[in-house]
Length: 391
Image (cartoon, rainbow, N blue to C red):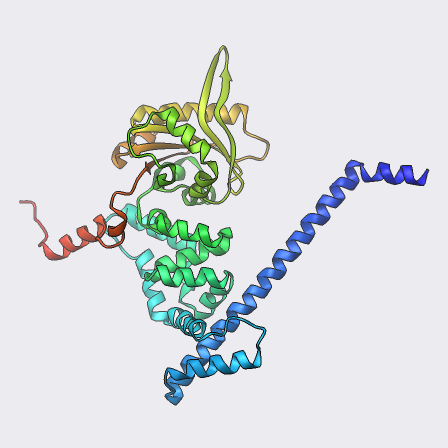
């Protein structure tokens, strides 16, 4: 009888749920322990780098001290890796990259400084608020932030980036979203910082959502989406684009960003005797909202906004779950005119964003990063040419 009771207990919903809860707790504890070990290791590397730099500055020690310290540490701790001369030089570089508070005050000024248009000012202030860059002037803040991500991630950021503002963005994003090293590298290559911070986003989120939710939705949306991973080089039909995205769904989810969960393609919505189909439907775990994507292989047209507004009304009435936020629509098109988008979204009550996608690089790979951006060229022109006066 006892054996039968034990078997019944093992298959009961209560026991199965109990085991799942314990598994979750074990995984959480292991992740926390790994993070604590990583944090201590990075702080150790920070202290080693600081110690060498300070001794060189105060006592005038030469660069040979790195080899001497490396040899002594490896002799004292033969089973511990990470004390090679190269690694010690990287520890110095890590420390030196984040100790100049004047540089980080310039980062704050860069992200919150006065610009030529009110829209740009608002966007930069929003970015500053979202990224909490005001705290970045503190060396202690940066030290703790650096310690939140693994050593390999830190080296990748140091090796691939020179702009302090970009470094700060990827440090925070990696710590927050738990990016692997490959994901971090792909995000850097795809220009996630430039698209998330410096490029203009077009949406009506502040008009259609509460302030706190509008800021989160703005963070979720990108100004452009890099779809180079699809390998498409010529013209494509909308259904072919959709098929390609579904076939590379994991890569597409990485490009969308943290929090997206795939719900379905050609998602059916019924109204009376008619049926309507949303190209791609996702659920965003952080926003707690359905996110509908409509794919357009041509440029944005104002009627696209009206159609999306209609779909969002149906989603809210028929699919929105209890406790969910209002559904959000994203129109993904080949190109867009920001002024046209602004007028098209001005009267829409549902939150809608419009973004362009990029199927291939606009420059050959060997020229990436070597030519000035459109904004940099415009800044040079403003500096060199005298201001034109209208008679």
